[in-house]
Length: 514
Image (cartoon, rainbow, N blue to C red; front, side):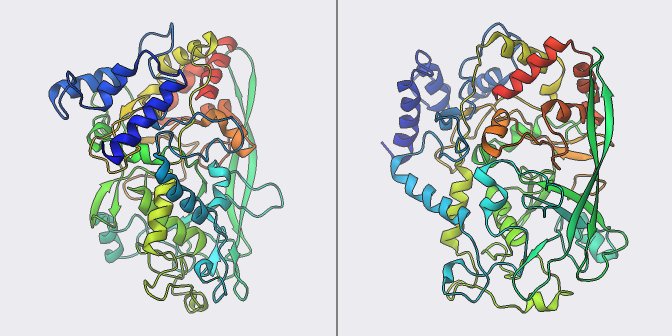
């Protein structure tokens, strides 16, 4: 038995030993392993079987099979505390857990300025938003907005401008660039800097109250944010500058999302809404540095990154100012207009020429791919089942697709051929004027956002100590997040507005169980 197969089966057996899927093992393994009697890999019979398994249910009288295992065989069953997002895939072989832990160490590493005696940890900045990956993704969870008077830590502003000449228009048209950065400040605002350098400026957010009256008379007050930049240290920004606030996303399940077959995602795309249901769904096509061409975007608030590795490399560069084999510029997001920043000492490895070596990048990518998804809670609770029915009947599953089966040919052993429940289609949708940032990114326009996965959303307060949601954390709870939905989601939102209080509370109970 190969290491892969042994690890996979061990994961399933581990779940069985907990009594979580007892009595259904044959069915589950029939989907996961090509045993005698199971459909051949890639056959019409297998595709039909997967389509039947992943079809949204119409029976809300009881929980579905394997619904508790949100992350398939990789689901994590651990105590519900602040570390619940920080465990490895539940089916990871013991001998691979050392790689996960070393990757965790790199993720937590506090980078320092160069030169330093700690040569494997120097090269910070010179401009940065955080000194470590963990600094934004605290406990591998969701970031939050800055408190009044505080510097933003797990939230920042992305920057770009409209194309200024034919060369820039050509780059965007070919997909070789997702956007054009500010000539001086680059692609994001860094509000910290090492000694001897000035931070770029400070994000300022102001809120305006927006009351929403529900059908039963309850009034919910939303807060509408307005963003600006204060204390600019490198001169004015471009007069056509576009700002887009972004909060750090939870890290769980990234490898499973990466393993969803591209054809299964594209099957739900309907950019011209030919079926007339009011839901379009467009793939974002973004530059893949390894492929040297366009690939399906899956990660980031606008699906601007195709792979976990590329997302991680760009975060090292933009957020911390650290170079990697994929993004070898050791000055991070510093532009040619920031000459001193470009000329500052680096922490480049003497042999490989980057601050993060290939081995370090492999390990941190492995770690990011394998942060496990916690098991669902209360799947059989009548109130949760009623809420699930409200979620489905309101049309939320048109974008928040409940189930997928991951690819057989994915090279991550822990993610191979799993039935997973991410509640996302990974496509772009028009979310209306209320959520618009009016800033394009690759094929995404200023009103479009990628449907975020919902698994783990009910554990946000447990892990992160707050309940702020959406791309800029403007929503202070899940009901506010729903009420900000517009555009293609307007009809679904209105059904929530018109719900009875009992049904609305059941809907929220369902979301909290994810």
